[in-house]
Each structure stands twice: as structure tokens, then as C-alpha cells.
Length: 85
Image 1 (cartoon, rainbow, N blue to C red):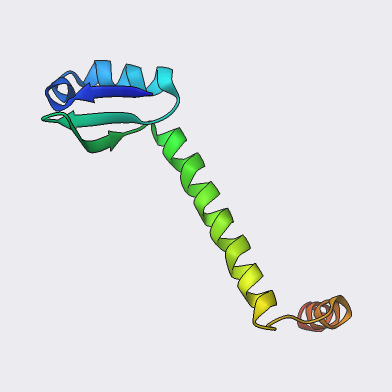
Image 2: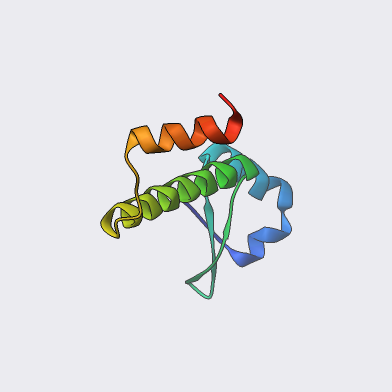
């Protein structure tokens, strides 16, 4: 985990290098307290994809819990009818 003081943000090349090397977030502090997080775009996109996937799983589990499901035969029949299969 990389932690840098806010004044180091002026050196953008170095911050970018650290993000790439860390392959994760770089935490930026101000007066000794966490203030910002800087990360490589690839890391951000991977993280967001995981968040969206986790949300989809949670939504699906809530559907099951609340009874908003259909059996496989009904679901397949509906898909076949919709797409003329």
C-alpha cells in the first residue's frame, strides 16, 4: 500500500509510476489524515466491474428471498417465445 503526502501530487509522473507499480490505489494524506485515493484506470475499471457483479448477485439473492423467480422451464419457454426459437 502506497501512502503519499498531498504535496507529492505536484509530481504527476511519479504518482502515475507509483500507481502502475502498486497495481492498486495510492492513498494521499493531508496533515497526516487520509484525503484522496489515486489509482490507475485499469485498476479502477476492474474494481468497478467487481462492484457491479457483487450488486447483481445481491439483487438476485433478494429476488429469490422475495419470491420473484420462475422455474427454468417457464423461463426457457418465455425466451423461446420472445425470440421465436
